[in-house]
Amino acid sequence: MPRNVVFVAPFPTYTTMRFVRAAARLPDVRLLGIVQARPGFADADVYHDCVRVDDAHRTEDLVAAVAELQRRHGEPFRLIGILEAMMVQLAEVRQRFGLTGTDVKTATLFREKAQMKDALRAAGLPVAEHALLGTIEEARAFASKVGFPMIVKPPAGLGSRSTFRVTTLEGLIGTLAEMRCSPAHPVLAEEMLRGTEHTMETFTVGGVPKMVSFARYIPGCLEAVEHPWIQWTCLLPREIDAPVYERAKAMGEAAIRALGLQDGMTHMEWFEREDGSLAIGEIAQRPPGPQLCQMTGLVHDADVYFAWARAVVDGAWDGDWQRRHAAAAVFVRGVGRGRVAAITGVRETHEEIGAGIVEAKLPSIGEPKGEGYEGDGYVVLRARTTDDVLRMVGVVHRTLKIHYQ
Image 1: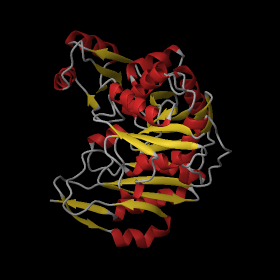
Image 2 (image 1 turned 180 degrees about the vertical axis):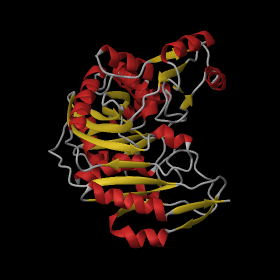
Image 3 (image 1 turned 90 degrees about the vertical axis):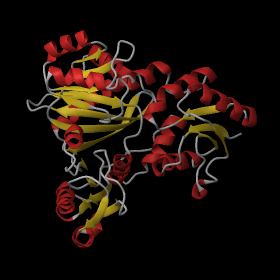
Image 4 (image 1 turned 30 degrees about the horizontal axis):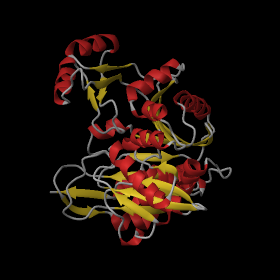
């Protein structure tokens, strides 16, 4: 009998469907879907059956959908998904049906950033000083303890979205007011970590990281958010045998143990401070963002999507990945605001580094300028050496330009 694997994929985005198709390729799996929008023509047959819900982030909607799929096809074997915003809900549904997978306690520790940092600090791991602020008095007390600049964000935020750097008490109080902070709805304030920002990705099976990969943000995410003209870059160097990576690996593996993940991928952002010390920004129980996920596969000549499916469905890891390449994603955007009026330098970029371009996505004329640090598009690069990738990054920065009006 095939195993009934239920994949919660609210919308059939390109990235989500890569994971869905990978899960469908697993042996002895009947893939069932819970969706808000059904997949398009190209993916119409990826699910054996699917149920549509009004809100895939609502636990009761998911419970009803799993019950309906159970009525049609028998007992579910696994309930899976890739979106950070629904990890706790998936865990709650697993608990209702007695399914194997990440439990509510672990999912909550990964999702609620204040609880995460409390757990990491209790395990002796370096994290930023933090506090949940619900009142002006709490804000004043925390500011007197850690000083400025300070980071303010939602307790269950995603990456650098809705994240603010404040430099004065007046700025802090104003930001709290804009975020409608209250004792019932506090915001998370943190000491600002300074230094070089990196990531660490893992595949973990049975609580043990089986593969570790590293990337570096150039510049850090918050700096890219605050300076809309910067073409932010995510670099995966080929060489990850320096002592700093060994220290970061030990730190990341200890974080996974402290939070209790058994099977899946993690994405940890960490800082190398100017004095050489390390600190964890935060860690997520999910695959990294689209281009980072893609590049993790590119540098290892491996299928990240299928490896994730094997981990969360089968609790298995298939091999010893070797790092054979370096890669980078350059997120392109220009100076100014408005709508995209022109894109220049495409031919020149291709003439100089065309052989190293794996994928490129550029905006259409007339599109509004992107609000995030990911910009209006991206260019993914790969080469045998880190130096060659960095040279190509420089070419993209120099030649490819987005103009607005």
